[in-house]
Amino acid sequence: MEVENDLRRSLEENRLVLHYQPITELKSGKLIGFEALVRWIHPRRGMIWPTEFIEISEKTGLIVPLGLWVLRQACWQMRLWQERFPVTPPLMISVNISPRQLEEADFSEQVKKILEETGLPPSSLRLEITEHTVVQRSGALIEALDSLRMLGVQLYIDDFGTGYSSLGYLDRLPVDAIKIDRSFVSNLGKAKSSQGVVQAIIQLAHELNIEVVAEGVETFEQHRELKRLQCEFMQGFYISEPLDVHAVERFIAGRS
Ligand code: G
Ligand code: G
Ligand code: MN
Ligand code: NA
Image (cartoon, rainbow, N blue to C red; front, side):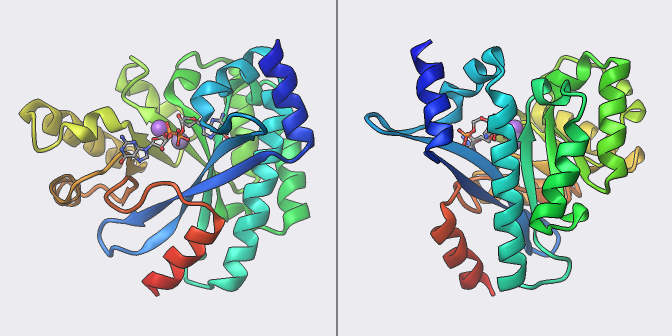
């Protein structure tokens, strides 16, 4: 449990930081907001990526306080950016949420409190829940999602297409958008079949009044194809990698 203790201490010592990846609208090219991605600045090992510590924090339950820290930090930071960089509609922030966090009975209460404390409008917050989480959709999960949505927060399904679910369950979930997993996007323009899959996902989402964000967009061709398929938003190295706070501010300033 060395990692766990290390991480617990780092959380107390403020050794976690957020990086932010820009999300743009395909139609207009406009910046609409950012996804917050956590990093751990380890005293000896340097920067550690979440793939190395999210799973263990889910197992140990540390993800609950860690997730609240991420959420508070992200909301606070976006509130500041909204003041510094006022645009219409206001920039939004997207935050990843683990299934373990949704199991906390007071999770939506906590989210409400954080929104009040930071002053971020609920409509500026998107919560990302992986498709794997929603596939095992229990009554409790739907209730948790419903109460979050009643706060005025938007819900996104992350890594869409990797959960081996039928597409039909989407219309029974209270969600606003899906994020198409980058494994589909990376084959766009290479494999003909992936174009069909992406097109089918986008069409189905639109029939259900659900918007689509494409993840992992790396090339002009992928971007052009997604625009043609009327995907609303995109994110990926083609626009920018995740950025630290200072780089975000240069990025926003450089675009306006
Ligand atoms: O940039 P990247 O390596 O950060 O992200 C790796 C994975 O970690 C992604 O799948 C992302 O969803 C997840 N992740 C990043 N930040 C968070 C976080 O704050 N909470 C949770 N639960 N997952 C995160
Ligand atoms: O929450 P999610 O699983 O989507 O986390 C995003 C992850 O994808 C992060 O690790 C981030 O660094 C990575 N990422 C973001 N854009 C790209 C991209 O264009 N290509 C690749 N290969 N990875 C990306
Ligand atoms: Mn995500
Ligand atoms: Na994802």
